[in-house]
Length: 274
Image 1 (cartoon, rainbow, N blue to C red):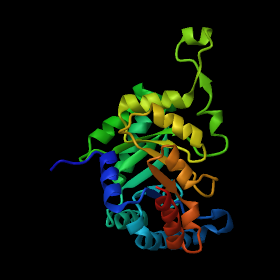
Image 2 (cartoon, rainbow, N blue to C red):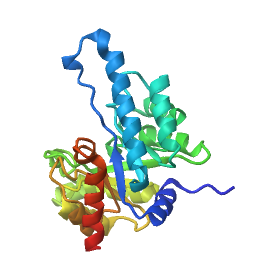
Image 3 (cartoon, rainbow, N blue to C red):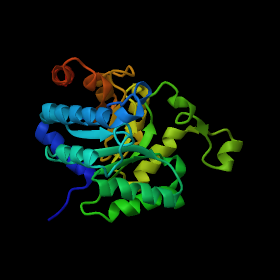
């Protein structure tokens, strides 16, 4: 059996389902308002809510992205969390872990092994840490699985202060520094993504001009996954027009009075203007 590379699997599912929407299933357990003895029951309620939402929206989704919101309260290998992951997989929805991994190589190796063993199909990493004794061990772990796990790099985040790091100007060499030839960090990260032939790069929908710029520098085979639509002010159509391949949407859908109708509305607006 020939297994599809993660980005090829996303592309195949997009062709079949016609939806570019990756749901950020980031339900929040507000511990500040709870007594410790109520954590368990509150978490179970949250997981049940996630189960029902996935079941309701599955046909309109391309994949699911999970941040640490749902992982931290009871852990990767708790029965509650594992049941949720298995439920998601039953709908043939790829699972992306948004850990933004960014540590030394040995720690990255351990972190990625845990997430992949837990059932995630792809992992988001921060390329700032570099390759040797940085991200290389994650790639090695990903390649040890069959099918191979996906690696997605951060290119430019969606929040208001993303320019602080990702937009900072840097010199590639000492000679460039002397001659004041500077480029933004997101160029470095885009080139790095090309070099390592990753499965995707994250670029915020809140920055359409940067989306367009990165798309022009990026290998056409590498998809752009774009978060920030809705709660952070990004617009779905603008992001797709600027070069996004897929949209990662969370709060706009999960906090809606009727998540199904909200997702249908987003897809209708996208399809009407394609």
